Image (tube, rainbow, N blue to C red; front, side, top):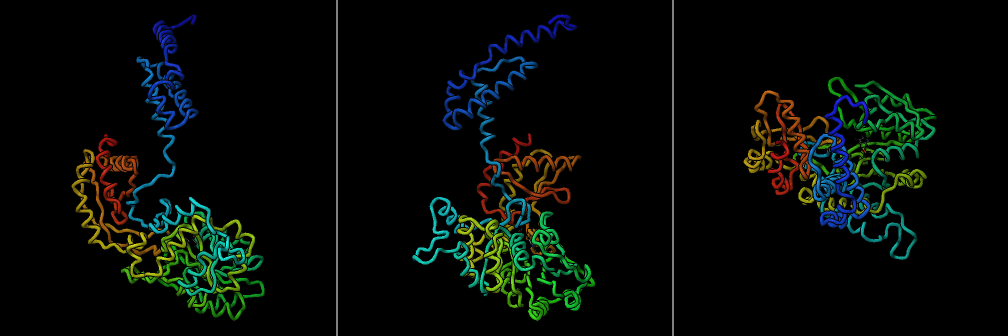
Length: 480
Ligand SMILES: *Cc1c(COP(=O)(O)O)cnc(C)c1O
């Protein structure tokens, strides 16, 4: 290098160039014991790529660092990279947010019966669309149709990917090229991606809004009906409540009006529970059976909300209106796979025995846990939590309120209990964010919530206490 302004830099660079030549070769690392064991675990291609990557990083570092890595150091770095890359992107987590049906954490946790059915369906060919009695080729929804009709009193049922798809298919089948009448108080948006007016547009239906945000009357619907009308759509106001000076039309009146006008009355329940939740101390939510009794022609609802099953959407109701949905070509793009159908069948079968439902269905188990029970759990774990917290935090047991989540009963909460970490230092906000990050960095990430200057781990959904306790000691190391 000619014309160097700084001879020190020049010698440093020359020194490092010599060093670079002494870096172990990819082959030497591959042939080392650590290299060979990495090949066993990750395969030859991934291992040599990772070693090349590690060497590249060492080359960059050597510009400032002094020590030349040996074979072992390069191998260790390569294995760390390989382990990080082989970790699944979708990881198991502890949902201690206090929101039982957390859309971002995958909503309902499935019962063991469903897990077993799913593993079986994944591992083997199944009779998905094959009539074992030698009869006509079956339809895949047949595996659950009878059960759904038995449980809900519906004449027929059709299953799709999720409830958004159920609403889409229902409207596309019965209101395409026509108007669908909806109350202005029910033009819902759920989780950003589900906007009723948008779904209606995609289904080819024209939205005819009636009434006002807070009040809609039967005469508004009566006046809106014309030769253009295909359906009246009622939508559950899942994630908000309109309170005060309000009026909405009872579903049975809408049903009667639709019937007299020979159009379909569609009731989108959103969550759609099959049981009276007041039996477990929860607020009574209108059930699918209620909606059908009130005269809805078609009822749509989700599989992974209050029902506690896999992600799917139901269209149930009058046979002469459900069949056209099942026959619509759009159904082919929205249908369920054998894995979810297996899970759904197992979940629905649990509903045949409501007495044991809360023991067997995790979603209902979480909802029905009492505050006393959760408080006792918090008391039990408090010492371990205290010992695990890094410097600068005090451990507490706190009462808190859990939420149902996923747009079910938006204003109702369930009294619960939490392990709390209260920062004792000055920069409380920063300390809490750091602790939350350390919890997320645990082998099984723990997701809590920050509330009132404390980090709360709501224990309502904690079943695997052993797994939770086992990784607590790692928290101090992460935070250090
Ligand atoms: C949640 C919800 C939907 C969407 O259901 P997904 O299963 O999430 O697709 C539609 N309508 C209502 C009223 C809902 O609450």
